[in-house]
Length: 391
Image (tube, rainbow, N blue to C red; front, side):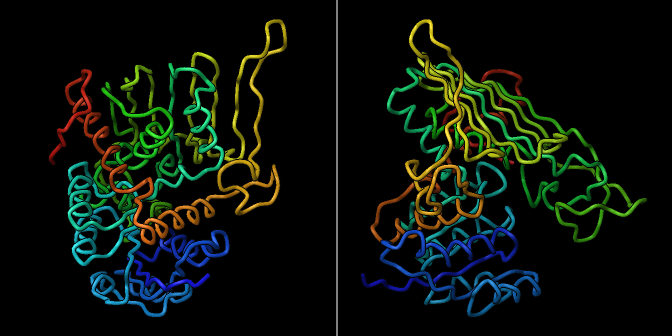
């Protein structure tokens, strides 16, 4: 099969940028039927050292000017893994230049920025992918298929969570994630977006919410240029945290199901616990990212027999598992999910069929976040409608 070359640009050469680069380099090995071959042309980062380090990722040239990436005539698709505050302006510029966009969630700092990004992509007619990579987990896809096929009956209850502990240490320095002008929302915009998107994937649209949010650690030690994992020196000057650490919401789905979503970035002991439990009229299932290659499944047996959950182990029969590992019980990891994501992005560009999740799915999530913000302010149930909050 003849493959055409597609020029790739990257904006943001940190850890996530390196995962995008790895995914582009690996995608042909796992999806050999793709009719394109990514060529890593140019990477940008405002930090000169990180920009130059992108050469080790395989990029032919580097720059500290993100708009130089977009202006490059050979660049057809752009990965945006920079901080939230520049998402919208970069997406707009890329879309207007006719470049396809793979961007990390939450796509901007606030719901109105997600809406602006979605409008720019739609107006330009370019293709997009958003980094809701947990959609790519083979057993999550399997769970989605079980629900869609009616194997669990009608969904009645759904509980979604994302608990992380990166901000649980009070000595952890103030970083961009705690600054409203850079990150925008806190846990509600960052990790709740994953919970909402996964619920949309599993159950469907959300009609209304009743939400609460709070800052659990009110201030953090300031440290110049600190990353989100840095521990500040003892005696550092303190700075007020500007966005939420915790959010929770009751949820009514449009199909009548009820749910609870809860997220926290200060949850001691819960390193990266994204998960869900789903209960239908005829069965139930549960999944956690910390055991991403296992699905807990309950399907009632005949009357009088032993009943209970059983563990389903990921194998080649589940989604794209077999593209990476040859046998059941040989687990996949986080980076492989990004390879699947890269495949969807490049496939959309080559055959003209927009894959999920794109900017439209990010906007659907943002609309729910918007309703949660309005609900937290009013203290009452709020419909998920057209309104988008303005800051």
